Image (cartoon, rainbow, N blue to C red; front, top):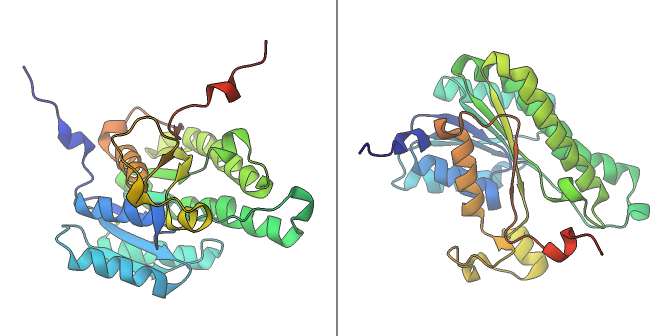
Length: 262
């Protein structure tokens, strides 16, 4: 009997850019990748927010190294500088995780043009900037892109029309660019999380990750580490036949919501 090849699930030796990594899901991805032996470049709009994350990784026993860079993903020059710094520091790019995002709750009629543009710019336009800027380096390494959408982008979300529209764009962007980039040897996929107990969700809903048991199946809220696990899978060779897909992680499906009325 042949033993399973768990090495295909490894990210050891990979070089990854993770945007929006100062806290929550992005931070968990950076920490998990570094624990698996990947070197990570983590960015945020504020250097002071991302420096502690890199310091914690570098001072830990994780084999991967971390480099913190200030970057606003809506600024093309800043994104190109992020890519250049990554290549200069680690010699190339194997994985791009487009995690940077933002939102606020408001009724559609109350969303200003500036508010609409800001949310679409960060979530959708930022994904465009980073993917295009890193593409040549990803082609050289045979790398992968992992975009972040949301269940809001799949089914909509009341009082979040700007965010839902942007994330729907990310989902379609993923399948479209995956088709175009396949002949360049670049895999492009997407993750659509449901509720995740990030610091932001905790401040809004009062749900702490400390109170969530990953072994419990019957739940509709997850923890950042569960999303990081999916991200590592998509970054690894184990997902080599997954291209252009959006993987949903939202817990138990709401059957009443999904079953049509008789």
